[in-house]
Image 1 (cartoon, one colour):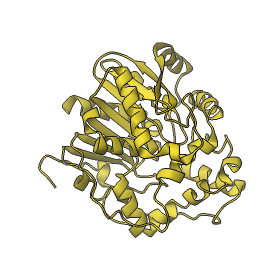
Image 2: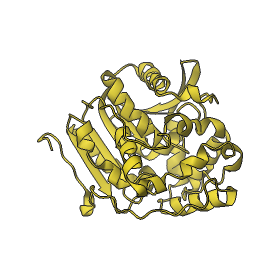
Image 3: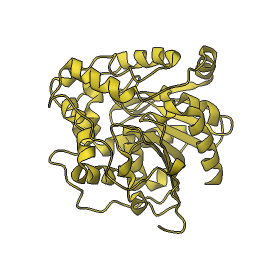
Length: 334
């Protein structure tokens, strides 16, 4: 490992190995009951601290909402605070408000913003899979950055937002000064894990269903909201999902997720030159922690990897105060 890189694994969780248990999946293309049981079992790992109604309402009153045009779509984002820009990207199934605790904390001395990715909530929701090609998504991020006043920014992404953030860092490095990734390995590492690790293949079988013609009409609002135990956030999340087109949201899986038969990429990625922080909840049932192996091979800048054994896929909800403290410490030292 380069002397400028560091790899921290809280409580000694190993980053090497493929010994995660293989999740059981009922059927190749499960019916609604099976999908619901899978999602409930996987996301019930989360235990979220309840937010007070006043905290969330006060935050919502303090943000300013914007809409910007890019590549033929309208993109919504919300922002608060003053200072260096921090832009948050959410994943599936989620929306901009998923980051409210982090935004509320960092807004004390940063200008924080979070966007609805195309396909979600208050942004446009094209249903063609071609509308979700990575270059178009990168252009969306650039449009929001330009509307905020210009690069470079600190980019923070979770799940598909993290996938997009990895690609922005590779393909448009001038847009960012720092990179934070929550619970998604580097895209090249994901492809490698799918091709070589039977446990990751098994953990990803839900993607086969998400790509099936039956998925948009089978997956219910309740099934994509039952990972939330914070009643105040759940109300907002349900409204956002009601505004979101399922067929549009699933295009991320149709267009960007590696296709079967899985194989490692035969090209080398552009190395990331921005200081990078990777935060990973080891109880993630979808993206296994072993996918972090060799992350340092993809980053030529200072790299910090922090693994939390007691966190799941939605670490920003599972461990909000812990993530806030880590972000504040890391941003101040990078």
